[in-house]
Length: 179
Image (cartoon, rainbow, N blue to C red; front, side):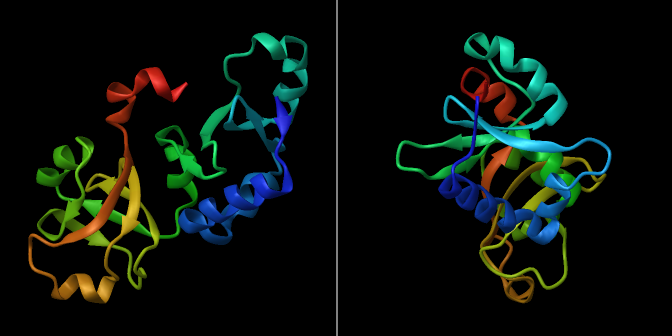
């Protein structure tokens, strides 16, 4: 388990800023228990510094430690995993709520259509990272907006509002690749 390089930190923070904006500072500068990001087998983990220090003795045999935020590809691209959803939901800048009839299609990996849209945060720009919630405020996943809030109001019911990126259904569909 090693610290991130400068390029990896830049790539990770650019991706996180797409979803949580300036709230990235809340991840690092925690008053209760300092946390840090570490890389282990191309995966980025968000872990308490105290736990990380205790785990240094078992490092070669370590499967995972902390919350897996995502994975770096061989080309250096960072892809967020659904395991980071709890943190993203806590600090999300823009949110989308899905009607009950749109929850299952989203959790099967489909995009969110305007017919399934319950609410959206005002002034959400196009191509912005959003966290997707059910109407009962349960985080279901995250994606990227296909349209801004103003454009979404003019869209027909079959138009795509949010491009799917990850959902809680992945825990079942891709359980062997998440860890």
